[in-house]
Structure formats: C-alpha cells, structure tokens
Amino acid sequence: MAGQASISTEILARYAADAAREVEGVRGLADSPLPRRHAVRVSGVDGAVRVELHVVTEWGASIPAVGRLVQKRVREYLLGMADVYPAAVEVVVDSVGPSE
Image (cartoon, rainbow, N blue to C red; front, side):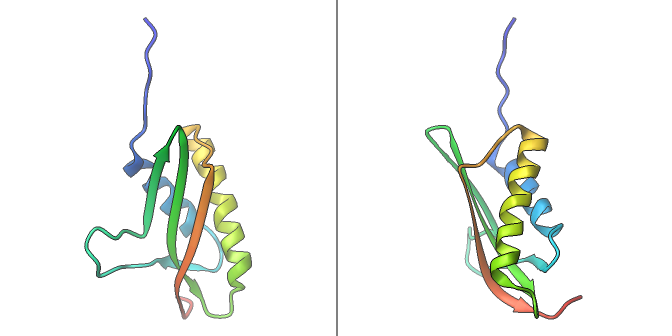
C-alpha cells in the first residue's frame, strides 16, 4: 500500500530556526511583540516552500555574509532533515546586539 507523508510548516519552521541559530554571527531569533508575528514563517504555494527568518546578529558581524550563511545552512538543514529544498530563504535582520 503506497502512502504519502507530509511535514507541517510548524516543524519546518522549527528546523529552520535550529539551522539559523547554528550560524556564527547569529545572536538569536528576533522576538516580536506583535500578535501572530513569529521569527520564522514557512509558507507553501504550488509545492514551493518559502522561508522567512527574522534574526538578531552580533555586533561586528558582516550582515550580508551572515545572511548568506543562514540561507545556505537553512537549505542544507531542511534538505537533510525533511527532504525539502526551499524555493526561497529570506533573512531579515531585525536588530544587532552584543555577543553572548
């Protein structure tokens, strides 16, 4: 009997968040006081997965370089963990803060 499995966008968002936190220069995910505004959003349209991450970078980190590394790491992580290759990974730097 053939079947089909699917992974919720919530799980993909958790995977993307874990991947982003692994990147050097990322201090963490951005908190938002707005209701229903999350640091990571995953959407799927016509079979294409799109990821939007809101991050906080460390002082002195190159924001463009950190953004590229986050994009790369999220793609690798989602491909390895869920066999999903996102069509787009958008990284938004909401703030910059001191290293922890």
